[in-house]
Image 1 (spheres, rainbow, N blue to C red):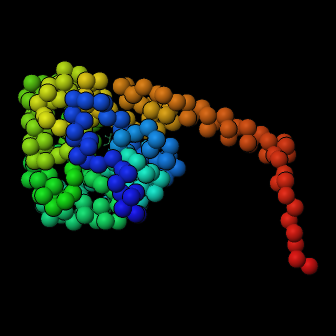
Image 2 (tube, rainbow, N blue to C red):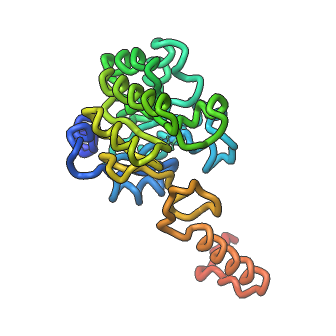
Length: 272
Ligand code: KIV
């Protein structure tokens, strides 16, 4: 990558500077051709560990590995030139020590060329965030519904219904911001709580199933494109991808079966 290309991209400090300003447009991305389309419209592309569920067919994100994240991170970097690319650190790759977190995050940054990582964070993660940021790795944090903890939480349910959990989520976001996160994803909380989190931190909040008052929004791209029949309740489908694929494949199959599939319009030249 040339120096010119590096500086053409959005940066983590520029995202932070958007706090309270122009809303930050974010989507998940997992492959190069889709990233190339999203790149025109997004400030930030997240190579989310949701890849395990929406691309690899896993039932949770817990089985996603660092190697999977690196493979998809490389593809998204190849497909994009403008957006800030953030890669999720998957379950088991950062929780046990700051050294483990640094090894995983630096591998992701060096092998993919991405500009930041994301971790799901409670107050316990503050030490990890500052350790990474001090060593040159921008960190986006993720509070509220944390899918990597779904075995503890008991499922993908909205969080913060009780005062104590709501307070804990605000504390998690404050700790993440204080430790140096450049932005905080807030997932699966009420509008009221997301607004409180947004007011409590001096870095942008990126909502998913939260409040339109967050400083930015993110959705899982195949969900918003309409690839799946069942999506979380808060997701608006902006496309009809499932029906489009079904129609296209139906037409193709019927042409193949009816032998109306077009022949190649060039002639092979065989050597005698
Ligand atoms: O993995 C992911 O796609 C995410 C978003 C839902 C924020 O973490």
